[in-house]
Image 1 (cartoon, one colour):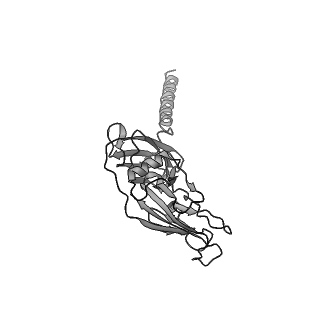
Image 2 (cartoon, helix red, strand yellow; image 1 turned 90 degrees about the horizontal axis):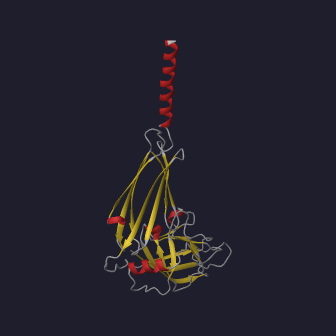
Image 3 (tube, rainbow, N blue to C red; image 1 turned 60 degrees about the vertical axis):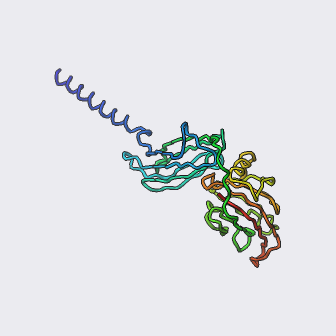
Length: 278
């Protein structure tokens, strides 16, 4: 009888050990490691409107699961952004512009590993008034793009200040012509996949003298869009570049020429514009 009792006791110890081992292997325990660190924010995550702050994102594979990181998704007001990682670690610092006084912006960061196990961090930043001196825009730049159905560049990168081929990297296309091959050129454009730039039409904006803060206010007061249809010469458009990560720009359309045949091809057309950035 004593031997039997001893066997039951030993069985109970083994069962408890197995249960404890399984309990520690929950999805939460196997989630990738994600931390965010901010700089430039005040109490309660406030930032003076018109200033910048940074978010450092640090990710690492879970040491228990050993699964590589797959993606980082950044959810926010406006288009979301998904960054492909495919590595065991990730470290990136983002510089962002503070929202207007009293306006809050929330960023939700979702780190996913190869098993689709996720870790999430959320940050809400609120703009505050600070009586800042108006910030002037930089030097004016001349830009242009052609009919996307032609043989020349059908898109433009406002950050790099360069034309982009129709077959180029989508995330670099802030302005991508959407006129159909065979149709007259109208200059309509949209943002590339994953680009996150947004626009607000603001024909009353003072292009010559308006400050960055003026542009931010006009953008906040308008209706943000990612596709601009049938622009006209002298139209003024305010751009929030790449979700705000690259600041703001103000664009003035100069000419839309459906007959321009610089491409010497069957789909002529060219739009020219001037723009200024932070």
